[in-house]
Image: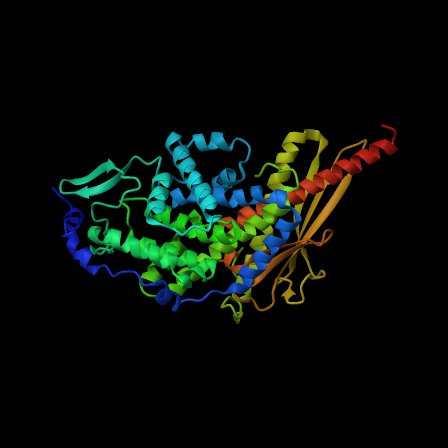
Length: 477
């Protein structure tokens, strides 16, 4: 006997076809959205400066973000599972990353490789002054779905696994059934070729070509998803299409990770309701994540890699960003605690390798005051937090080094403001946008922090080695 959900599935899809509303032209769509270019310009300027200073380090830095985007694009669709640590392992190609990937099965490895090949392909394409055409999009679909043999289809006799037509437009309606029994309409089968032709025409329009890359990426993604031209794989293709324009601008992908999925779907739903700005803002955030990850990767690339490893207080008033001061303080405490945990994890790995020749201590201290790096910052309440890291070698060298780091938070935190950790000895700053810390630290921030700690710990151990060597020479060893 068929379930009630099966009965609903047999509603004539032509009813959903009739509900389809063609996507807006770029001119109409862009009129309802704007780009906050301040942060984009800041991070782009930083990346370009690093590129000019160390061009040989840039390919590796950009590859980390590309691999993260390529791996998580399949996980977002539920093709396989991942988490922050696993994505980090794949992105930075940590020790035994291939073995870790193989544990998920040969199908997952094949899917990732197909997706990575597709992202490499769009990066190559983005460097050419060639307009996007239907044939190229079909080729992209075939490439990104190369390892997927079948997809699930509702037919007159129920659910069936059918061969996935790669690079070919859909032959059956693919309107998804919603929880209330209604359909979300995509382009009808007979309208798909016409809509895809119009889509590519919009991407060739002068106004589109002159638009900001984030606005281009957001529109290309959303309009493509509105059509849903393929039987399956539309989300993966849409995220890759959006990346064409961020690749073309700064060689970064649109970095949408699994933990962004809820915000991602909410932003798409808001755009369905006419709120284009929500999806543009989401797209900008993900592009900023990619830019910052590339920036941190360049800084860390010159250092030998090291294997990786608060209760709420209500405030009486809110900051200009709508947060309570207590929320900002707790976000800051969690921020420096993450730094402490990551530092301890990486030093433990070093200790496991060095054995008795290396000792370390990582501790968080409560302090009343210290010099702030920014006049617009304050110490978190009720007391500041300082991270103290010490490393040492035993006798006869008896070498010891200490490094400390302090946390500061914005006095009147807005949604664009940064929380900051400063190295007291190095005067180096690590910044995190408040939106990457609340409601909880996101994957991109954790990955950036891990990369930064690799650099800090690598430098600290290298300096310790030099101090120990000097000590031994002085003692006649």
